[in-house]
Length: 484
Image 1 (spheres, rainbow, N blue to C red):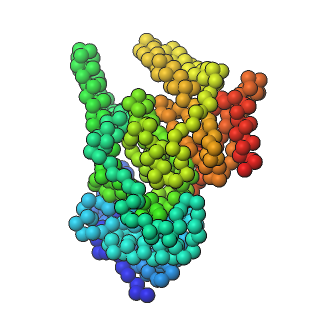
Image 2 (image 1 turned 90 degrees about the vertical axis):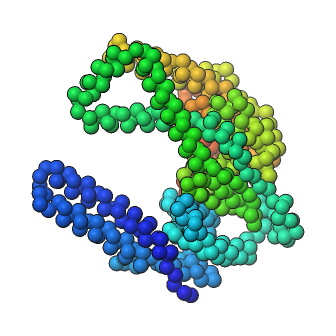
Image 3 (image 1 turned 135 degrees about the vertical axis):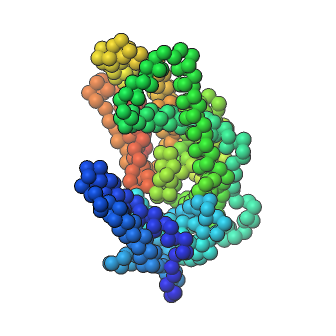
C-alpha cells in the first residue's frame, strides 16, 4: 500500500507541539537571565531553542506517515527511533473528529481513533490534519469489516431490517436556537468562573507591588456601598456572559442521529466536534437537572460510555439531548437507546432518618468552618455565617432527591442530589460491574446502608453512591443483582 503523509497544514500542529515542549527551556532561560547569569548569551540561547523547535516540528512531520491497508491502519512516527502502530479496522470502537474554524474552508480536520485495547486516557491514535476523504475511507473500511464479524445483538437491528428501513425513519435530533439559548442561560457554569476570577485576582495581587494594592484598597474603602455592590454585580455579569458564550460555542449546531446502527453527535462553533459511538458501549443513561432546570422542568440526557469519546464533556458523560422537557426526556431518549423505559417508575426515596443524616453531614462541617473563621478572623470572619443557609439548602436538597428503583426490564434506577444537581442513572443489569453495601456501626443500629454502584466509564470506572437508604431495600437490590 502507498505510504501517505499528513496534509502540509499539519506542520503547524507539530510546530505547536514542539513549541509547548520548548516552553520549559524558555522559562529556565528567563529565570537564569533575571539573575544576570546569561548576560550576552541570552538572545543566542533563545534563538537556538526556537530554531530547534522549528526543525523538530519539520522532522516530526516528515517522519509521521500512515498506510490504509485492506485490514488495518499503519501509523509510523518517531524522529530517531521509528514507531509502527497497527490498528485493525474491526477493533476500532470510536471515531472522533475535531475541526477548528480555520480548517473548514480547506475541508481538513483532526481524527482520533479509539480501540478496545487501549489502557490510557488518550486516544489510541491521532491523525492531526487529514481530509474528509481519508476519514470517509477509514469509516467505510471499518464498517465493512465490522458488519462481517459482528453478530446481531439486542441493542442492534439486523442488517437485513436496516436495509429495508428508509433513511428518513432513522431517529435524529437537532437543537433549536431557542433551546440552545435556554440551555446556555440555565447553565451553572458561572459559579466556577466567579471562583476563577477570584483566583486570578489572588495571583495578580501577589505579582503587583504592595504600594499599589494599598492604594487600591484605600480607594475602595472610601467608596460607597452602592459602588461596591455595582462592582460585584459587574463581576457576576461577566461570569454569566462568559458562561453563556462558552456553552453557546460548545453546543452550537448540536445534532445527534443514527447512522449505520451507530450514534453520531455533532456540535461546536469554533471547533466542530463529531463523535461516533457504538450503542453497546453505552453503560448507563443519565437524566441530569440542576436546581434551576429542575424548577423550570427541564432536563439533560447524557450517556456513560465505555470509551474516552466524552472525556472533554462535563463529568465525562456524552450529551445526547442537551435540553428538553422533563416529561419527554425518557420518551425521546428511548428513540436512540432502545432498552430505556418510556417513563420513570416510582422511586423509593430516602426516609426521614436518612434525610436528617444527609443534612447533618453538610451542616456540621460548615458550622465548624464558620466558627473557626469567625474566631480567628474576627470581626469580619463572622461574615462566613452566610454559608449556613447554603449548607442547609444543599443538605436538604440531597435528602429530598435520593432514591432507588428496579424496572420490570431489569434496569436499575439510582437517583441522588449532589451540590444542587439531581442525577438519575438508568443502568441495565448486565452493565453493572459491581455493587457494594457500606454501613458504619451507627448506621447498622439505625437500619441504614449506602449502596455503591460501579460502572465502566472511559477506560476506568465510575462509582455512583446512594446514601442512607433503608438496609432492607439495599439488600433486595443486592439479591436482585446476584440472582441474575
